[in-house]
Image (tube, rainbow, N blue to C red; front, side, top):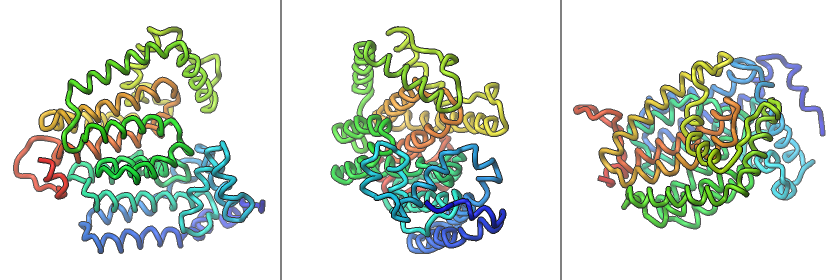
Length: 394
């Protein structure tokens, strides 16, 4: 493989100069699709500003080595583009970095000259997803602003990681499930098995329930949700002898991968501890790092963001409970399942933020869409950006 580090001999501005074509593609996409679909200028402006983010994250906001996985994806895409690695070989590999790199390599963008480059690949996906959600009439006045201004989403969709691919396929899987398009939903969830199998196994049963109960139209009902929750709790107890060693294995592996020492991680000791941590870890995973747990400026910013997001989640949930509790209970079940699974195995604060944001975004987007949440508070006289789909849910 040729030396990819030649780009860094061109200095700070020179390195970014080579990514101007990718930047312009993203910007033109915003302008062309914004004009085609008559998107208000305020939303187009924020999307356009998002196009600049890859320039100002790595080696500006933080050192590029802070998230070293970016270099692996960058080299993987270059290996595929140069022919040193075959696409079929990458998809057959058990290395999820290579699989995700293969998917990124299929995006028709210039060859990535630095890790900044793949940030534009992901920004493009973020922009395209915005217009898909607009066309599918998912957005309400609340969720569109959350999509555009959620800091963690802005951060991770402008970095050279696989998180945007995961986010993209998760959203599309639910969009098509909502439309009862089974085949398209299966096509979108399939890549998750290759690049993030945990999310595949979390989302798979949820999407199945979404189909079975026609949640967008009928809701699930509190009684059904409670019944499913109780069944899940019983299954948790019955699976404890098999599940506990596996959970402990992943807890240790992820803790060590994030730079910790194996002896410093607390292991689950028995069935009662397994159930207790399974139930309590969801809320903690959703909120960490707490302000007093922050050990760096970035973690402090993330903790402040968490408090704001928790406030928004509370307001959205309260509005949904007042309007359509039968539809809300399904998404509450989704969040509890996702947060519990990750809460059991993820200890690192940065990793928690990285893994959490797609689920938070999904919750806000689809609770607002299914429950017609156009305001965070029940006030009158406020003009809302409400799509026809939201109106049809009344």
